[in-house]
Length: 171
Image (cartoon, rainbow, N blue to C red; front, side, top):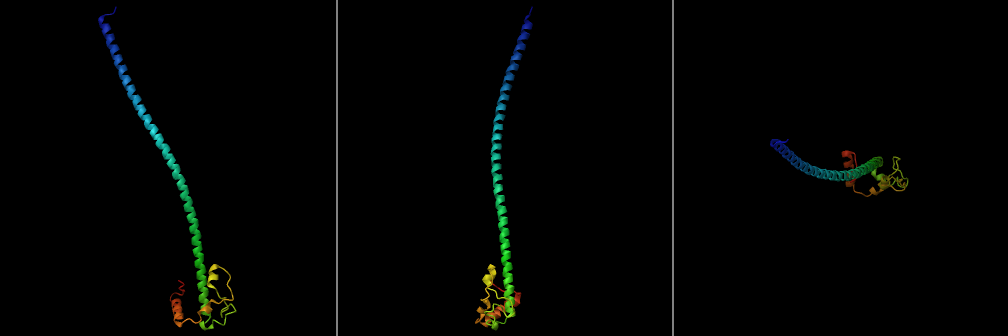
């Protein structure tokens, strides 16, 4: 039969087992609480990730727009540069033609060539606006005939500016 000591030992062991079970319940509660906390953090991180992806898509769209703007700017800049260079080239040719026309024909000789459309050196007279616009030169007009009647002081200034740099000051 069972003696009192065995019952007491059984009672102690049952009490220990109940203590273990209570501690395990507490640990399980703590683990479940920690799991809920981690689950909440995971959801927050997933929400942040979704927001970041949306921002990233927005930024990528904006980057695409800006790349388009840069491309259009480069194209426009190239066109403007080409236009400026073309205008400078036309102005240079106009200036050279005017200089050569002025050097070939003496100032008092402006009426001789009128009507022929050519200066005394055989080069066609140039209309500044037509030359810059790329239009054909009107051979009946002589831009140098407008210089008749100007003071000699103006001629001296023009000659002095040509001698300095070999260029006309058109501005």
